[in-house]
Length: 391
Image (cartoon, rainbow, N blue to C red; front, side, top):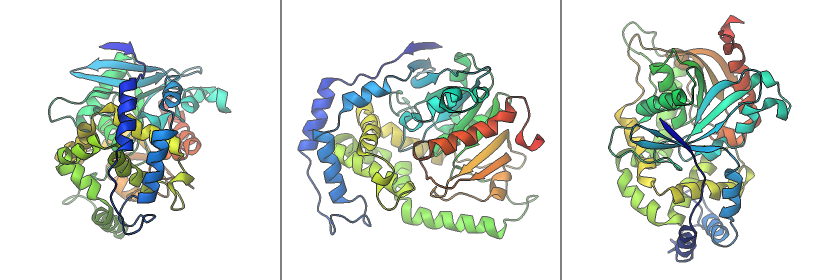
């Protein structure tokens, strides 16, 4: 496997083209400029677009991001972008963290130094990790699949090859959103190599073995299934569109930076722990850096299509199936619908469950310290071949 250093370097032509498109935006009308009930607020997007065009400094963000150790690996027929920060400690444990949509490697920027060098941030050096943060195929600076058939199940195989290419035969896996699905499939497919799983989300398609020979669905579990169905009906149009006709949506998001921003911002507001103002949690610079990574990547069709791949292979376990690596769940209060412990334990080797005091779907960005401490606590005993249940 070939691995090369990588540096983010967006051309001036692309920056000029973005400003031109922002300046020539054709704006919709709204019943209420400030309202969010019908979707992203027109007033907010106007403010964001003005800032993006006139005050946002991509070069400053690019320079900051380039302080991270970026690489590209050629795996099968894909070029996979990833960050690889080696740990500072007596015996760092390899750990691969996977983002989701509408995120990117940027989600992990704040947790990378905390995980890699805990001693420099008030922690125990014995908790250090070798941190690997890849960009999903078609996201950020990873190339897009050339044909159908690359979903979370297959990406798990790519990540295994990446870790082996880096010299890591045993490693932990962490993720939320799509990253939770990729991490889960790694644990399912490669239990001898995955030391443990740490998840801050359970994939919405996850279904443990049910029916004959299995315990009946409890009232608590049925309440979760009902809640998830109501949420999908009220809030899940994006997933249905991306999971059925991603190419149609990609035309608008590829051509219009404002359209892309509106599509992404609505999720950052809806899914984060805020008081109805997304700027309570994220700065405009952070939001626009995330959106710009999607814009400059130029692969909106592929990033959206990952939802269609997920629908084609949902995470439905059959009788006898089990995800055996010791698993920890960090449940953040403003997360999308999450199943109860009993539902998770039907399919996962669940050894740790933490109800967090604050945070939402973008846990690594919203509450990096809480997330990192839970990761450290889960993997601490696993470094010595034991699970938390053995202590």
